[in-house]
Amino acid sequence: MIDTTVFQDKTAVYYTLGCKLNFSETSTIGKILREAGVRTARKGEKADICVVNTCSVTEMADKKCRQAIHRLVKQHPGAFMVVTGCYAQLKPGDVSKIEGVDLVLGAEQKGDLLHYLGNLQKHEESEAHTSALKDIHSFAPSCSRGDRTRFFLKVQDGCDYYCSYCTIPFARGRSRNGTVASMVEQARAAAAEGGKEIVLTGVNIGDFGKSSGETFFDLVKALDQVEGIERYRISSIEPNLLTDEIIEFVAHSNRFMPHFHIPLQSGSDDVLAFMRRRYDTALFASKIRRIKEAMPDAFIGVDVIVGTRGETEEFFEDACRFIEGLDVSQLHVFSYSERPGTQALKIDHVVTPDEKHKRSQRLLAMSDEKTKTFYGRYLGQTMQVLMEKSKPGTPMHGFTANYIRVETENDLSLDNQLVSVRLNEWNEDETALKGTIISL
Image (cartoon, rainbow, N blue to C red; front, side, top):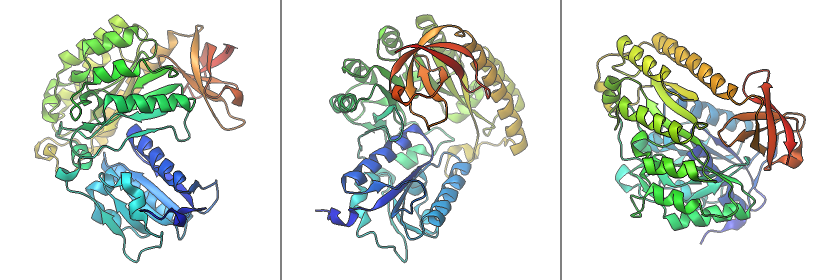
């Protein structure tokens, strides 16, 4: 039995790095602490507990994690410092040595945070609790919105793919999930809290069902029946797991939005082979065509990594030609970062940092053009926008069904409301279209 009296009237701050899944899990950690009596610290208030949920997808991510920990230790002197997430799982020894850290929790332990906090007394030496990769098997449910309008529903965790450049399987373990019934229950709870939009998150969500004998398509069909939720978005799905039946279902669904995020990683078949990806460019192109045939207005975001080992100039040019020809809306561009223990380190050709930067900038410019072209098709149209709360005195923002970001005058009463908005010109920094509200 946990003595929660020690947590009464304590305050906490939370800092999250990395993916939507991390944000979802941090929100759940916050909920666990709130239920134990801990409140979120107000701006400028010194916290009693600091929780940092880390990422380790790149060397830069590791560096940002260390910087965040140092900053929070300085901002909240004397606070009990907890570090969890992928960096904590992969390098618990390194994290434990950071001054001010009291507790390091791995992938298997973070869901049981309360069991490790003790009496919140600072430690002379930090404690680290992590499990070996083979022992990471639990699935911690999470459906939270934190400070956001949208809910994030964790449907799956871990990955069995072991791509040559990636450490995520080592940080999160094998693919696993809850049941369809449990996901539906969480979606209904979100609807009861007033949630209108849920983003499905995970490491490899298309792999859903391995630990429950179900499929991702089963999950999609079941969630589509939940009353009260008006919008679902599929955060990211591998192209080889995005089936035609899923595409067809989304095309005719009133709740699943015409919005896809699909990792490509490279537009060169040679580089895809180096990466040990489970598809080629022909399959990827066929998925894009299928989506656009079924949903011409669909927004499609694509992940691309530049400068991986083996990516010669010729292969990069192949990739650029392929990506240029794709009818997609946005590129999420990442520079390759060497990760210890990965198979990619055995590949000979190494791309210099300067060349990585040049390639990244070239693809980012291509992305800007694709996004502007996509947004430009809808200038002057009236579309439904789910508004999100913003700070007083700043514009409100929201998204159309097909993920066009819209900016309107601030009206706090519109938070979490679906409104009809006429899409006008770009805003000053070209991050959204200005909108005129037509009706609620």
